Length: 470
Ligand code: BGP
Image (cartoon, rainbow, N blue to C red; front, side, top):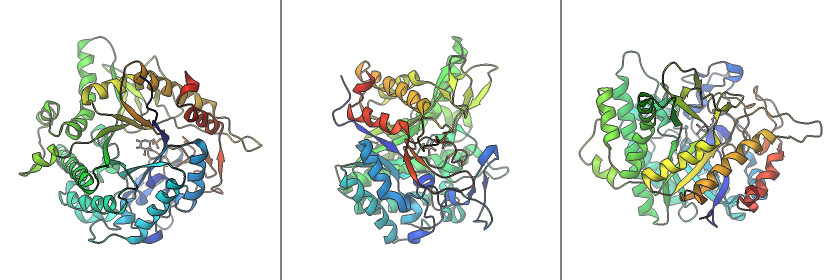
């Protein structure tokens, strides 16, 4: 076994962190546009409207909106076979509940896709990546409301039809399971809990509506074009038991079940025992309507995509560390990034095995990487050897999963292939890119792009289909 000849090497971004142009081309506000930055450890604030004197990182982000030609040329220079970006829902439906789409929004992505086509780069489009229209939150309560399924279907129908034959790979909701992993399901579901509400009921309903919406998207996508490949997207926060105590094994299993809750419905088309057991434990179950089971059954995904950043441990009396969404126990065998995310390259091989074993569907690693502070040398170069080291180890583990364990893997798109705004903290100084963007945490900078050392390293990895790492 070796990596597929057509292995989709590339990079990943999302509109809310990359695109900017927040009021251009008739775009409506998204949930991120009212989220004030949180540089230097200050907690992020969510407002109900845009305050004129506050700084919101997503408004300009790193301005892909005006730099897309330049950026895609750089991706092509690195040899990208695939580029993951998201469509900003509020660019297509500014308030989310219109009946007709915003043509200028559709045209923007026509231009982006046209540019990718010029270089033979395959688009991988996330339909919903932390950027739902703000009006859907304010008018309908976001995914608390079943109405959202209908709006999402309309949005999907429009983009599947409009980009038919030009986009083949789609992801429905980014990191859908993250809504179970933290107590702030704002980014995934647009939900801020109200005092005294039954949180279990709210979150189970929201999860159900999002899963239904995803299943409908798969059906509509296949009807529109049988060549469409539609995947789910999970964050995979691998968990180990802290000791060989059977109690710790059970704790680790239960933590991973929060992820399988979503994977099982997406891939198997029904709520598995893992899900029903969780309902029992939570003392609530999703409000289902007749026909829902049928929708889930007929909307199973074609492949499983996931993000992989870190692992953690479960057990008793542990020091707790946080990753991006989830937190867990500190593993004494692992080092961590400057943001405290535990680095576990071998864990990627384990994760690929667990997911493939469970679902037997092709896998796609659509996010991986490490946020780090970069220093620009006097001559403008950036020696990001730490990034190269991190990615090299992870890619080796990924290749082992294919070559030694025979996992079926479609591609690898590391996160933030170009520097962009952090989802977790709103910072710019937390950088993931092969391409440096001159912008700081106060929003200052020329937005000039430059190639880091890792740019040339990754180019060679792609050119040799990973061979240079063997
Ligand atoms: C994932 C998100 C991405 C991205 C990444 C890195 O959870 O899907 O949007 O941001 O994490 O996280 P952060 O930006 O917080 O470093």
